[in-house]
Image 1 (tube, one colour):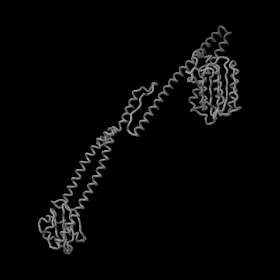
Image 2 (cartoon, rainbow, N blue to C red):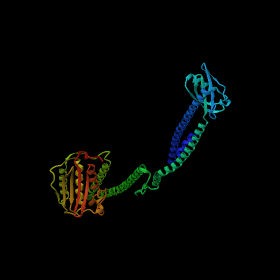
Image 3 (cartoon, rainbow, N blue to C red):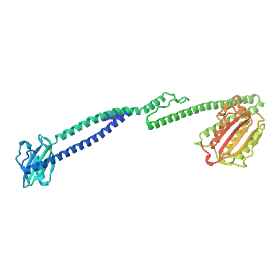
Image 4 (cartoon, one colour):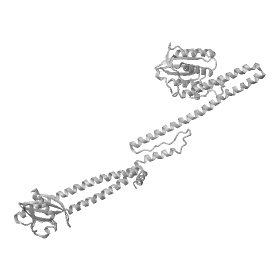
Length: 484
């Protein structure tokens, strides 16, 4: 039975459960208040009756002492018994009227004996057989004479009973109204929570696997500061889920594009390797003089595929740098690395005049010199590949605040605005028509950005016709060298 009640209670709505709890609490309060009020009223009326008994016995005692009779000093429905006390044992006098004493006077005699022992007035509440509750008072009229008077408590019981009835009816109506009205008020107060639950159920109707943003939000009002705080947290959670879904969708798209591009880039050298291998086999059998040329091309395609795989492996290791960082930091001079990269560029791209702007004589940083040199080579090579011959290129090293900066600028045609945000994406080419021999694999800038970010720095790009600038910023602090 109790188990069913618990299950039924747990199945109730929160508003109903709160209303029932409030009703139970109110019932306890009403019971305490009613008990205290009833007890106070009973004690008050009993005290009034005791006072009335005392006042009546004063007049009755005087009448007995003066005239030996109670005539004219009696109250309706009261009992009176006069005892003569001899040697501590009370003896009942013959009553003036048989109706003055009840049929059973044992309680009166006992009270008179107690008064004789106590030598002061004595009060008791006794149930007289066949008569009901009476309040008895015994006092000494004169030496050796004791008067016992008994007043009925029927009026007190009736008054207290009426009070209890009024309280029960009033408290019952108040409790019913409190539960009914309180339940309605609680349901209205908790309506915002129901609305949020409805909003949460609405999210289940959306396909969370697509890249679209969730349009579901809870825009209700009311419910007080607590509900408003919950609503704000709820909407913040939805925003976080929304942003996470978008990031996940974008990451999945990048991954699919990356896999497709990597497959495409690797397929070309593999096809070339296969073709030149067939040609080499044919030349070895039929045209020995062509064999060395085909072997050289075969080696070139294999080397190209090796460079591509090295870049892909480096990017994968940088993406998982928290497991194993590909950097080997040490103290190195950034100015010296820039000069080495400039000298190598002048040798391999003599058709692009390069100038190194004056700067600090030396700039020691804790970095991976091989990887920073790779960044500089990639940026300079990118400049040569995407500008016509004769385009001037400049490199400058400077110290800005707590960071070192390397600016690589060219006076070429610039990068279109639509492509500036994606030049660091993997396998992305500004000129889609450019051949792979001419334009590279599209990984150079992606590798450069990932390496700089692994050093705690960043690469910024500004471009307009006649001025394209890549700015590499590396923090000076040792702690800037991160693994993420």
